[in-house]
Image 1 (tube, rainbow, N blue to C red):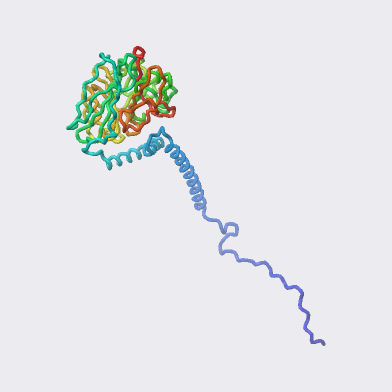
Image 2 (cartoon, rainbow, N blue to C red):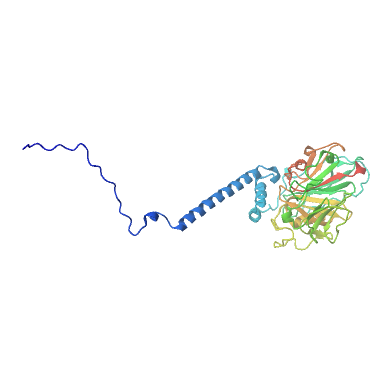
Length: 416
């Protein structure tokens, strides 16, 4: 019998598969599935994230476009505000503007800086009377008048016989905010023919024969151009032009009416004038601020919204207004440091018997006169703003991107 050990096997036995014990009381098929509400929550979060990304992308792109778009204003602040109003943020914009002006009130006292006073125009006119008599010089509400304050000087293109159709001056708005000056323009409506131009987007509903830009042929007799009123969503009024009722006219609203012969008037719709076949256009904006030759009641009421909730009426900001005198001349007032009461007072000083507020804020208040030989096309290079503080380029009315409506004053045929 041998004592040798038996030979070892050449291969080791392989372990069998590991068998895990099933979870107690759990079905193998659904052992790792979460409750249904978890999956619904994940889907909602994913959809919300996608919508948020799209919304942020949209607002980001449109905001970037607005901040680089000159039609939205000169300053970044104005462009941001315009973008906000166009995208449903008007209430927030108004609140922001109100808070800013509350925290940055107009300066009290002091004297105007030299660069805020307009240069006296060096226009030589021919002797003899004009169709409408030039008004008497304005008396400043400040204690001591500045040199040339309230004195009328001819501005812009002259008639073929050398008569001035526009006279301009400047004046302090009140006896308190004496470091500000506002501009005043007087227009002879016997010499000048008026026309309302729509902007590229305001009021909408075009195209119209008279839409920005001012054409080269129309510029041959151009004398002045100036801003119209608020955006129509804030104007509390209507708009009629080129035989189209773009927005229904509101009875009682302050209105600039332009007749087909170029005559212009300012008054209350439904009382001072009505729709007739001779009406070319009507532009409404809020309610009258001057009536029967004096400021209307309630202008100083901080809770009044008849003259626009935007910034209210008591903030001293850049404002503009248009009035009609007893003999039919038009007077325009525009500039900084104006409450709506100051605006009305200045229009009355300039002879207005009825007047209304036009647009407000620095970027939108602009009155420009234009020079050059009659019959020669001109552009913004021929323009001079009523005040140095008016930031709008005189060429904006010649740009097809200009979005806001405006008025144009041109020489009548017999004066060309």
